[in-house]
Length: 109
Image (tube, rainbow, N blue to C red; front, top):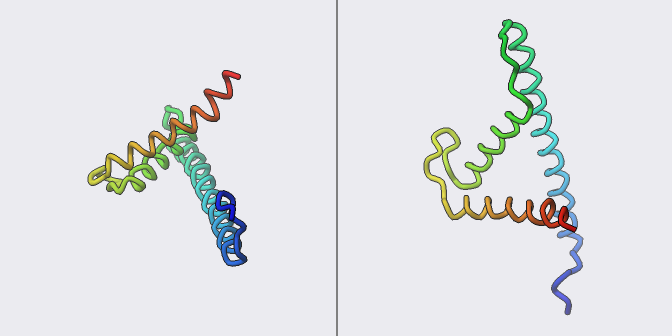
């Protein structure tokens, strides 16, 4: 029996479909929240006539990234206390693997 690429049962296929749908919805919510925060910051700063540019969209992306990183590591998202350094290392390594596979190695070919 080939176990490297098993055929999913009906129940497993339903599970995958539900999970993928929820992931798409979750990401749409996150993207929408980032766009809303960026737009709202711009509007609110203009309304009080602050002569400094509003934070860029990337600022809000980085805030979400940092909070989610802390959450994954088991740390308090406000104090940064209690995180697992091994999990943090694995997450960072995963990011480096993505960088190497999709951006560095492909650009060299």
